[in-house]
Image (cartoon, rainbow, N blue to C red):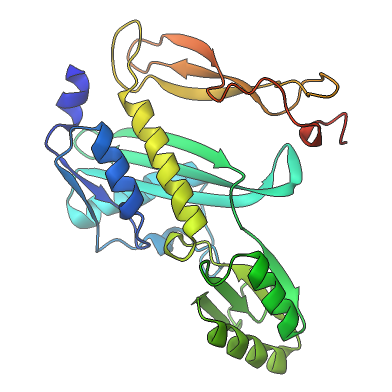
Length: 287
């Protein structure tokens, strides 16, 4: 653990976020690393790298975006140790009819340019959107998306345009109906979607916290050959067999760990003990 202490001991972690993520990222890293504390970077503008609601298009892939966010946080704050996250939402590859949430966390050390990263994919998300033509449809969608605990975005068009009317962060029933009625009167339809910003979506905030806990566990995992920290999972091996027909699926069967210090590699089974996959995720049983 000497290398771990040499890297992190008594340093303050900056969290590059505008959306309250420090509340779940900071404590997870504090439990695992010998850092002195953590704080949100108030001067950071993470929206410049992309917005879920579409007014700023993300130009880089999620990993690269998280790296740029962390470097931006270090630049504007002068802090050397900065962590940032980036989330993506869309169809789950083995079963495209199901939505998933992929979260990236990147820890950047400006002292020497080192980058530590972690990715976590989960099916626990309320991500969704729907075109509605009546207030009742808007209300029904809101109920399915666990409103008002989870905020909504209402927009005059499905995809944001420069001339779109858009209201984000809607948490109140009165505001929801008032905005919906105004947009319906002006445009005939209204696009309603979940607000996926972390401070507006408790489910996503929970997943960011889970990702941070997993990241912390990876950072302190030591290599069995050289004892260096960050003996991390670098790839997932598909092929978990279907529980009905036995065919290999796209679901993860095992993980590959790699030491960046001595290049030692090993393969290990899933940690949840799952040995077969549900038939709904099988390309043979559910083509």
